[in-house]
Image (cartoon, rainbow, N blue to C red; front, side, top):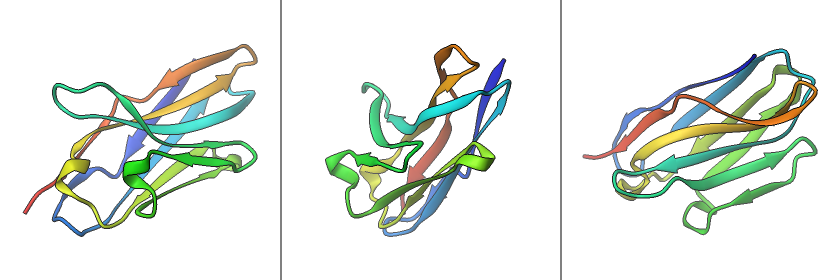
Amino acid sequence: QVQLVESGGGLVQPGGSLRLSCVASGSIFSISFMGWYRQAPGKERDLVAGITSGGSTNYADSVKGRFTISRDNAKNTVYLQMNSLKPEDTAVYYCNGFVATPRPYDYWGQGTQVTVSS
C-alpha cells in the first residue's frame, strides 16, 4: 500500500511564501510523475504543477514565475515552493503521484489547506 502525505500548508499574507512537501511511502517500485493540484470551494480540482522522474516540469499559467516544483527521487518527495502568493491561490492543495508497485496506479494525498489573506 502506498501513502502520500502532504505538509507545509497554512495561513500567509498576500505576497508571502510557503513551501509544500509531499512524501510517498510504502511498497514503491518507481514514481513516474508527481504533481500538485488544488481545489477551491465550489471549483474543480486543477493541476498546479507537475514533474516527471527525469525532471521535466509543467505549470498552470496562473502560477508560472511564482511557483516552483521540484522532487527528490531518492526520498520519494515532491516540493512546491510558492512565492508572491495571492488571495486567489487559496485552496486545498493535493499531492498526486503515478506510482508503480510495480503495477502503476494514481495515488492522492489527503490535502493541505493554503489560505492567503491579510
